[in-house]
Image 1 (cartoon, one colour):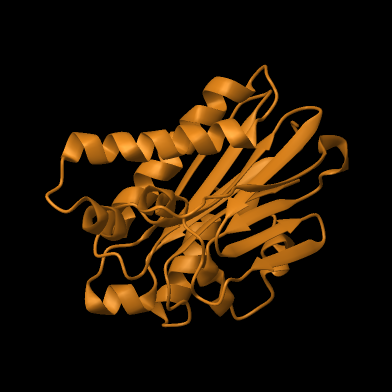
Image 2: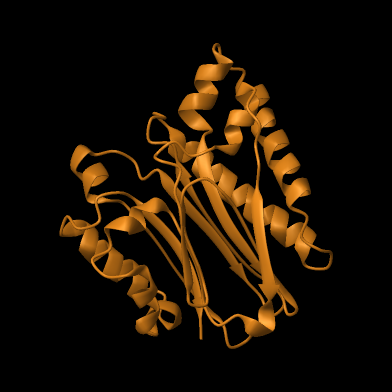
Length: 227
């Protein structure tokens, strides 16, 4: 665990910057000697205020994992149930005139996360994005129509997929939103620069430079672990 360092970045893409649109992605992370958690979320592009759900959802998932996974096993079904109940509570607190419209505009977001403990690493995901485990990069692609957990509130089934591996075999791990597709080099090459996990400003500075140059058009949230 001590050999793994965490780097993260949350940047606004050129297309959103040019139109003065809020960053619709979110990230949250936590590092301790016995537990490392990373979460990224991407608000639905069609939702006028989907950054609200992405930010609140990412933070809720992070806090849930910190509370429940320091000692006990990771339970994806319990996390999914808790997140759905939380989204219901947000609607109840808001008491919107049109509940469905409120959900569609605020609470639809993709979700990718990981929990690293001394013995086991768990990865969970729902919707589009990228994840790299050691040398294997996986693109999660649903043809720009990803399943959102918040759609459960609209009567659709929500699922949270999972993978796991022994932490002793983990050398590098990355989760990122689909804005990473515009990187000018393969995503795996982010690990070629050790500063991206050792220097907290290196990865944000690099991605921000690409966004200002118009290379990264969409918002990006990425969390990566490396030695």
